[in-house]
Amino acid sequence: MFQEVLGAYGLNVEKFKIEPFGSGLINHTWKVYSEELAYILQEVNTEVFRQPQNIAQNIETIKKYLDQTAPKYLFVAPISTTDGNDFVVIDDHFYRVFPFVENSCSIDFVHRPEQAYHAAKQFGKFTRMLCAFNVKKLKPTIEDFHNLPLRVEQFKTALEQATKERIKEAKFAIEEIIRHYDIEEQYGHMVDSSALNLRVVHHDTKISNVLLQVDTGVGLCVIDLDTVMPGYFISDVGDMMRTYLSEANEEEKDFSKIAIREDVFAAIHKGYMEEMDPVLNFTEKQFFIYAGKFMIYMQAVRFIADFLNGDTYYKTNYAGHNLVRGLNQIDLLNKYIEKQSRFEEIIKKINQDRMSDSKTILN
Image (cartoon, rainbow, N blue to C red; front, side):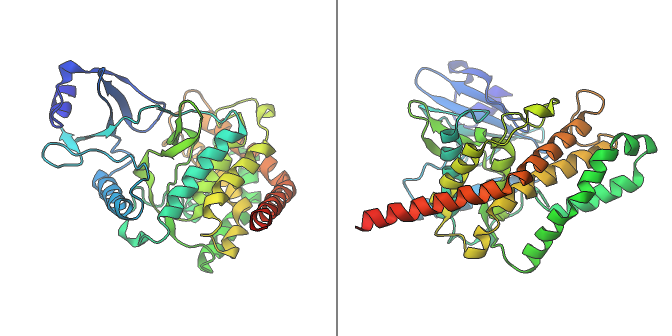
């Protein structure tokens, strides 16, 4: 396989070392390197991305736009084969090659607020640079990816069809999902009232999807662009809240380890809004805190629905794994909601400091 794929790019497989790379759970990724050259080789998971051609088309369309409007921006797009193709297809498997960005690195967890700041700034910058781009040119790469009303309907269906044993086991989780139905209702009102603008958003803003400079830790660019498609800014902000705020991730069984780091929340807001403040309208800015509730709740709903369905979607490693994941996210959600007044104070302080800095510069 390696010989055939690399050969399509004019590369001699015998001159390179090849080893697994990164921590992604969807696509298979390898680093292909020699003393002089380095690339990233990836096989696209077509069970998740059923129309990989849409990914290629979206990336190429965005690349052409950024080449014209922001030619200095580091946009890591796949390189073309010697025949000018975006993919190499072997036995219905789709492969592509990216340039390896030297002196860059990625991390899997947010250990310090400044890491969250640089990541949020890069995701904000990406959407800001595409604010004048015609979002209708992009095709969905995963249908209904962040469609919260659909996820709630799927939960209701799962609840109707679940066994008595699973319903009994998930009793508390089910009650909590129902108790927070207002989060989905608010989302519906926001969309129906056109309070949110459709934008180009990344949709998968975990910290590992940002390249950082090795020496300084400064953000370089966003990567893993397969989920880039039309959406609302709350998807990107919410996913950062869900995955950055607590040191304990969704796999943690000891919920006492789930804690909201206020300094990380402040870093996310500061980094993202440094880029997006001129772009978001007044109404959208009022939903910044809501974004966290939106994404955390949706993930909890998905885990519990899958548990009720008999664990048919997410891979599980032990009995009740999806229930534990769902309860984990419910705990995170409740702790996030408890912090809402503090979040409002933090945002107010950041905005006051920004205005003070602006006045100082003008004077």
